[in-house]
Image (cartoon, rainbow, N blue to C red):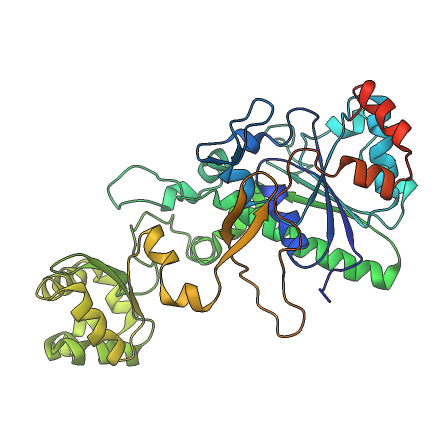
Length: 402
């Protein structure tokens, strides 16, 4: 058993935010039907290198990017610009619990596939729209890419070196978190439907998601009135909470309370720091951040990273090395937590994918289906779910509808 078995998701998204949302739901047991453009598919199929498997269409293989967000789905190719393709989507809506889309505002309405069109066919449908700026407001008609939203949503203004240029996060963080917020909202809407018997529209925007990610930094501004600034790897409200350079490399250390501050001073054999009135409380340490960090850098430069980490762990202080991506996948904790999984792929054979961040004691997430080849399940869905005959499928193919 899985938590979302018997829930069907009609996925007409592409790129990352929408596909990440539907992959999460698929991991938890939902039947996700991914609708893609015939011959082209989700554009991330071409976002590489690297690619794996056999070439198909215009692609040299399956992109690692596509694989990252599309396990546990069935791929159906449909030309939604055609009347026949629009009818297929309407039929799929009738047998689905949730539709997730990330088209520009109004594009699906023009095709008769907007929320107001489809809720008449299926009043229990949960229609989740994921877009750059949402369905309302002066920017609602604009496209929104992750990097643009990181800039416009304030995230780049607080990311990067103190005296360096604004920087985006090294992953498409607003895409990913928008997908996560969308999945959470869909689960809430499904629960609401259990109570009311009715579906609803869920409106998720990358811009809103980026602002929500600001959390404590946003609260600092809204309460204190001072614009936040870039702090590199430091914390705006805690000191010391930063990366530090040892003799042979970097590590990161977090001190979140006065007990930990005392433990750190004792471990470093720096009673002078503990006694210094400038550092007597966290608030004072924040005020005198530069002076304290300078002192700590001098001390940490005396020994190697491994030596400091051993001492810090023994003292019970939160700390860690700054790992590369290969390092983290080789990490004993990631191995113990099964954060690398293997799945079969129709063309590439066995591929490795990141593991599940959610662990359940009784209804675990599973890889039931590998990332699909383009249109791999077209006949299966049309004939098995919608009742088309083999002749009908071939007729649709000849008309360019699938």
